[in-house]
Amino acid sequence: MGDDGAARRPPVLAVSPEALEEAVRVLRGGGLVAFPTETVYGLGADAANPDAVARIFAAKGRPADHPLIVHVASAEAARGWAASFPEPARALAEAFWPGPLTLVLPRSDRVPDAVTGGRATVGLRVPDQPVALALLERFGGGVAAPSANRFGRVSPTTAEHVAADLGERVDLVVDGGPCAVGVESTIVEVDGDRLTVLRTGAVTAEDVAAVTGLPVAATPTGPARAPGMLAAHYAPRARVVLAEAPEAAETVARWVEKGHRVAVLAEVLPEGLPQGAVPLPPVASARDYARVLYQRLRDVDAAGADVVVAVPPEPAGIGLAVRDRLLRASRAH
Ligand code: AMP
Ligand code: MG
Image 1 (cartoon, rainbow, N blue to C red):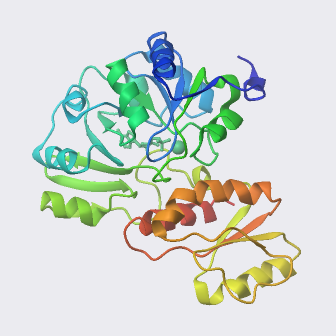
Image 2 (tube, rainbow, N blue to C red; image 1 turned 180 degrees about the vertical axis):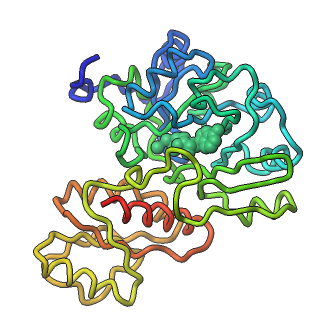
C-alpha cells in the first residue's frame, strides 16, 4: 500500500454477527481490524503473528520500539501472556477487568518481540466494551492494539475518526459507536509488590492503592515513563494553552489580540470572552470532559482555530487524566 493509503476509505461495518465473523477472518489472515474499546478505538492484529503486528507499526507510522497492549477476553486468558501474575495483579484484574486498566507484567514466551519492542514485560488488558469482548471471544487469541490513529495524531473515539485518519491502511473498521471513557487506559506496572502508574486514566493511583493495600508510585505528568507517550500524541494541529478559570477570558483575549483564531474549551465557558473567540460546546463534568476531549480537539482544527485555550477539570478522579493529556498537548508546540 502506498503513501496515499489514507486517501481511500476502508470498509466500515456496523457491529453485527457477520461483521464480527469478518473481523475474525481478517485477524486470522494477518490483517488489521480497528475496533471500539471503552477508552479509544484500537488498531488490532493477531498478537501471536509478528508479521501482522509489524503491519500495525507500518500503518501507524509508529517507531518499532513503542510497545503495544495485548487485549484479551478474560483475566484467565491474560495469564497465558504473562510469565507470572503476582497477587497485586490478580487483585487489580479482579477489581477492574473488564475495564480501562492495563497491567504491565513479565511477558511469557508466547509474546513476540514485535509486540513489546523487545522488552521483558508486556501490557495486558481486558476491555469493557461489548463489541471488543465479543471480537476477542470469537477470535480466541490475543489482539495487539495501540490507538487506531496515525503516529502523532489525536486518538480516535469514533469509527469515523479511524476511517478518516487511517483510510485503507486498515483492512476493516468495526463501528461500535463512540467510546464511553474517551481517554487511554491507566497503565500500572506490577513488579512483584512494587506498583507504578505509568499512565493515568479512568482508574486512579488511589483506586490501585485501595484495591491492593500497597503504596503506589504515581508518575507525575512529566517526562513520559511509558515509552511512546510523547506530547504530540495528545495534540491537535492547533496550539493548546492551559488556563485556570479565573484567568481564562484574559488569556483568550491575549491570543486574540495577537491575531489568532482562538477556540475555548471548558466545563463552564468563561464570562467576558472577547469578540472573535470560538467557544466549543461546554462539557458537563470531568467524566464528560474525558469522553469528548479528543472529539473537541478535532473540532478545534475543523473550526480553523490555531489556538485553543482549555480550562482543565478539577484534579480528581478521571479529571487527573484529562489534565495530564491537556498538559502534554500544551507542550507539543
Ligand atoms: P497506545 O494504546 O497507542 O497508547 O499504545 C500503547 C502504550 O502502552 C504504549 O505507548 C506504552 O506507553 C504502553 N505500554 C504497552 N506495553 C508496555 C510495556 N511493556 N511497558 C511499558 N509501557 C507499555
Ligand atoms: Mg496512541
